[in-house]
Each structure stands twice: as C-alpha cells, then as structure tokens.
Length: 391
Image 1 (cartoon, rainbow, N blue to C red):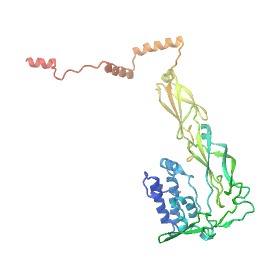
Image 2: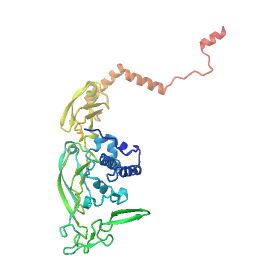
Image 3: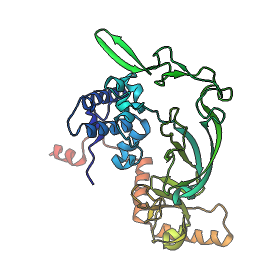
Image 4: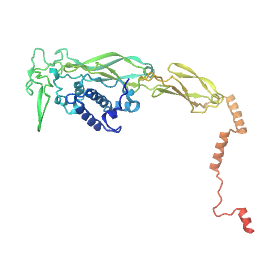
C-alpha cells in the first residue's frame, strides 16, 4: 500500500493554519490542477488528493482525529468522488458559485450536472457493553423523500412547466466582470431551463415530503463518543436525479457503573482490605467478559495499578484490544467487631515496637517540622574558639 502524503503538506499549510488559510490554499490548488487547464497526466490525481486533504482539515472533528491518529484516524471518513464535477458540486460554495462552469464543467459532453442529495443526522445511544462488542440497533429518524403526488417534479398533476425567463431555457447565464465573461448555472431555474407553472399542493413545489424512516443498523465494535457511522444512500434524494445523500449516526456512550473508558483502555477502581494489601491475595476483578483472577502481591500500596492485557476495548481501525487497568485502594471499615478491635490494638502495639524505616523517616521529618533545632547566631563564638582566644 502506498504511503499517503501528510494532508498539511498536500495543501502547503502549517498545522496551526486557520480555516481561512486552508480554504485559500485549496482554492489555489483547485485552479492549478483543474484538468480543463492542466493537461498533465497527474492533474486529476493531484486534484483529488487536494480535495481529500481539504475535506479532512476543513472539518473540525475530522481534523482533530487526524492530528491525533494520522491517516488511520480518518480512514473511510472522506467521500469517494467519481470525477472533478462531483468535487465542485460538493464544494461549490467555496468557489463563489460557477467555478466549475468557468472551466466548462456545467454541461460537459452535453450532460447536465446533477446534485447529490442532502446528508441527514440521527443520534444513537449505546451502553458501554454495546459499544465494546458491537451490536445492531433499531433507529428512527425523519427525512424527506420524493413526493408521491407529483413524483418529485414539484409541479401539480396535469400542469406543464414553462421556459425560464432569466436564461431563456438554456440553463446557463453569462455574467460579466470587466473584460471577463463567465458562464454560470442559472440561479433562477438551477440549470433546468424550465420552471414550474403550478406548484404541487402536497409538497408546495419542493418535490419532497417528510417521511419517518426506521432502519436496523450494524454498529461496529469499539466505537466511542462522538464517532459517526455512515449509512450510504440513506439520506435525502437528489433534487435532479443524482445520488442520494447519506445518513450519519452520531454515537453517544452512556456512563458505566464500574468502568471508565480511556481511549481503548478500561479503568476500574477496586477496594481491597488492609490484610489483603499487606499479606497479598488472589481476588476476582470484573471485566466485560466476566470475572478475572488477579494476584495482589504482599505489600501492595493504595493507588497501585495492575494491568490485565487484552481486556479493554477493541480499536475499530486496527482491531487490537486495549487493556483493563485495575487501580486498587485500601478500604478502611467503618464498623469493627470487638475481636477486630482487639487484634488491631495488638498490631498497633507491635508497630510501636518495630517501626518500619519509611515510618521512621516520616516521624523524623514530622518532629523536625514542629520542633526545629535553633541555629546559632551569626556572631556567636564556639567554646573551642573561646579557648583558643584565651591562649
């Protein structure tokens, strides 16, 4: 597999570049590599490479994932454009309208350019177990579909379209700016050359009507908060016969009662008793796949972290599983039986007879803190110095 060039290098911008700088850099490359003016063999490839880089870096979420994970973080998140016309249709607003027409893209080969349908969004809420293992979810959302009454034309049944008065039926208009003349798509009829004489009463001339959609969606294992699952072609239809848009399922993961997630790792805080920490113990820790036997060595301190390999979350890109991080803390009982109190008092007496080195060091520091030794005055004379002076 060929190594991809860094997107920042493709657009020749710094990693700190603003959205305006990225827009400006992409416009320059689009003009430079447009195949109608650049006849080199790699013009189309360079044009698509610049578009892919712009699609990622101009989107705040995609750019954040790219900055953190590189190309692997945005794999599958960019559109696959069939030709240059599709690119200018997707980013037409960036070029101020009519940019593709300036290079003859409006009616290449007599084919009228079609627009892609609008994308829509739906929200999917998952438990941590569902996000970790993957699942199928029933989702319900609303989208616009082709009107049943007018079959998407927007015209009332029996009515006939009329010729657009602005472009005279050509679908194109000529705009002049000084010595420049530019042919662009007619803004009145959107390039159709005709207009509806009597709008459909059901859709009010839009050709679309609202629909409640229900789908059963497969959620891949390892998704996390803010990730999106793309349902290709499940968006709104194109207004002029082009491909339908997509539906994006935005994932949110509910908080879990035991586990916290850190990327592909899971964190669990586990209480242990003083005797287990001091003497060591075999204890069962929870995982998403069931209990796991963990050895706590003698002398374990509160806050220590033990790693259980492969019991975290699967990375949806690489397929590798993260780890379970078990952080132990020593739980102090609030209520004690008489026997427990008696034994703890005996232990306390033994601690006073045989003080641990760490405790000795701490007690020494504590004693010096509360009762520091006074330093002799700067002009004081030591007994030895006084004896020497008498001589």
